[in-house]
Length: 251
Ligand code: 13P
Image 1 (cartoon, rainbow, N blue to C red):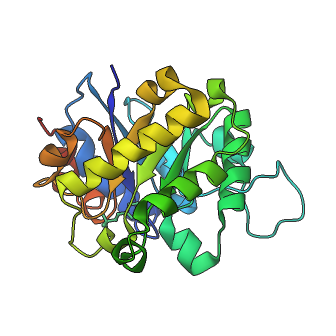
Image 2 (spheres, rainbow, N blue to C red):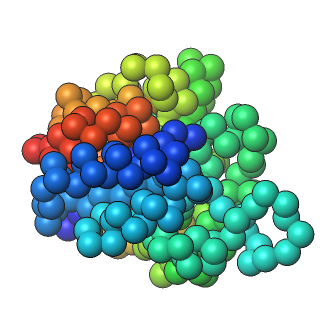
């Protein structure tokens, strides 16, 4: 019922020429599969060239952040409407790097989610605990709090358009993937929290992605789990061969 969704988060990698070269390599290798949707979130400056290259494909284009206001005196910021005009259909918000390095809060995530939804874009809302929080037995509480605050005031109807990404901070860029059981357990909790916020039927439609050292070797076993509906991929999405093989996974 839920289609798989695999998103490449390029972070601050791939300038315009590298983006063009990546897609020239990747697109011929990419085999469309009706059960798997694919998206790429390049840095802002590469959105234009990425959109041009993807125009003939079914791959979604997205951004890695956005501001919640439509326009105004917000130096350095970009609005949801501006992203939409560039052809973006989604934006990643609340990534742990934004939270840890740039001080973003659950309240900021909430404003961004509401702005994206009202512009008709899909927010990919990232949640996840640090290693300390996991060791203190706080993982469930942290993820629940991030979701409840990040999605406050989102109507059940709009909630059906939200994608959640569970990215345990200790698994990002470390090569340490959560075990399939660890990931599934948190994904199941996330689905319960969504059900509390928007009802069972919405929570059954909500896609919950796993992120943290996902690659072409470990993707299939993670995606086999009941509540893991896709992946948010950093490092392995920068290599055309690996990303093509990853999105071509078979469970
Ligand atoms: P890695 O896949 O490089 O661990 O990054 C995960 C991530 O942060 C995706 O948003």
